Length: 186
Image (cartoon, rainbow, N blue to C red; front, side, top):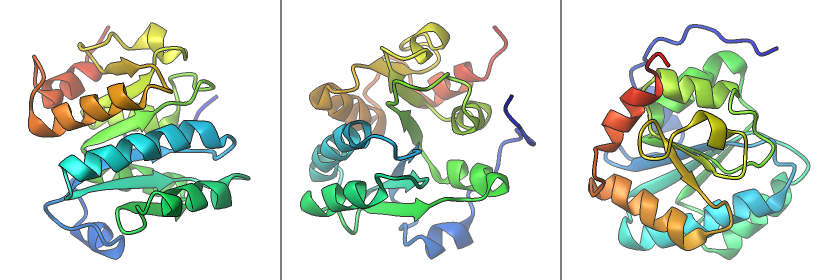
């Protein structure tokens, strides 16, 4: 099973934001990763590279640790994203809500997701818009454009456009409304 703590909405911690070097006005994309595969994170990094060109005051927060940590770090540096991406390493379970509170959107492109990972549940509880892989079990849980977004995980262009649209408020429905819908009763 999974262990879920208090799912109450959290305030953004100015102290945590500062300790991570995230400017107060920056938009934040967050993702949790076991860092078992490079490809999933590499696609997100490539999309984020394009987002930063259009939205320079954006940061990518990656929390987690695993066997591919160094390869992911190298991919980040190869894309010259060093100051825009924060690799936190492993975080304590009780700190997860504070990290999710910093995010404007949570992305999980893993094909291995069950859709019930603590980071996704926490993001939904905190009314954050979520973006997931349409080829993962999230495709059965999330209704695209209603309570989250589904993308093809290798489609860098689609993911880039979606993130830019979220940050530009150019969706048919505001992303915050989608975030609110994600935590409604089904």
